Length: 219
Length: 212
Image 1 (cartoon, rainbow over the protein chains, first blue to last red):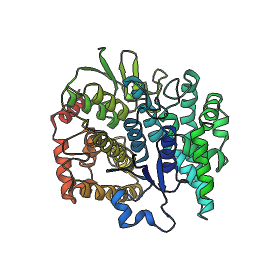
Image 2 (cartoon, each protein chain N blue to C red):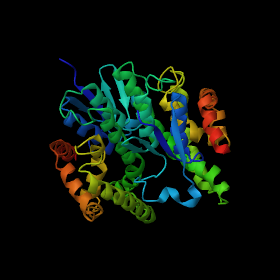
Image 3 (cartoon, chains in turn brown, green):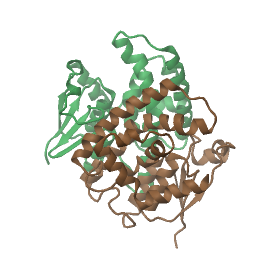
Image 4 (cartoon, chains in turn purple, brown):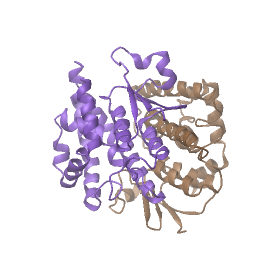
């Protein structure tokens, strides 16, 4: 029987939870290996061997060692096409191209402002760090513009890349979840009709609920 | 197959990324110049977070330069330069990994530096020296990782030039013509790698488009 894949990192990390959501959607068994970031484990020489930027997650599938959550997700989908959700990364080149486009949009346009807001509003207070109000308002404005584009797109298409839930939608779950549930920014999503509908659908997927449970158990 | 069209500006780094890919794949395409001065890239006909580059082939419409290059590299896998590592899931995963590194580690600080050191002077705007310092420090850390990586493999993702290296071309090109050049010059393997990738004929063809 194949060894379960290994994911190194805390489930509370947005990038780690992106990989966990993908593994659960694909029904791929995994072992979650804790990394104590408060103690700086992610900067230790041993950890830097598997993630040279000292960030989480790191991932291993037998002899294959990877990092960067979106690359790990694509690898899982390509290596296990017949497992779990078969259409998660598309079943033909055109579908895949559309999914790639929206994963890039997530990475280039949604992630930067939402990451800043998640850190400033959800993590900084808990870490007793000072917030930066102008950084918060700048990034709220940026994120609003992004979600305006999403609202138009989601008026034409049920999910971002097409009619089916895909890696593109999944990629948004970690940051959006914190914005809605830990940063009191739910209105960003509920004030736009199509975005609200989309958020309701993707956040109620069984796979995401399981990730949220893992995050709750970790606190 | 329907003809490929790229809408963009030869002076924009993200458009250059797509053009470099098309030239390296040696495939025919039509380039539709978008005059950024005339505000064309803001018109409603481009549904996009970043309106250029936009790509069309028949019914397929794509934006995001890295999704466009991925599609072209895959669809025309047997033409021109092989820009992927299709041998196994593992080699493809390494390609995806280093593509993400360029997008999330190299791109942010280098884009900010190109904006401060190349575009701002062009538009007669004042460079923010604090931003330059901050981003040079950030980029230096990334290039340290690259220096270690290039000791293990000739190019970032493996032993031949791929999409990963190609994606760096536009920002690397402008940075090598700025004060940030020192970050590359001081790292021998990175320096040799930049010299190699910017000398590719496909990249010269992209720069030629700026002459018209």
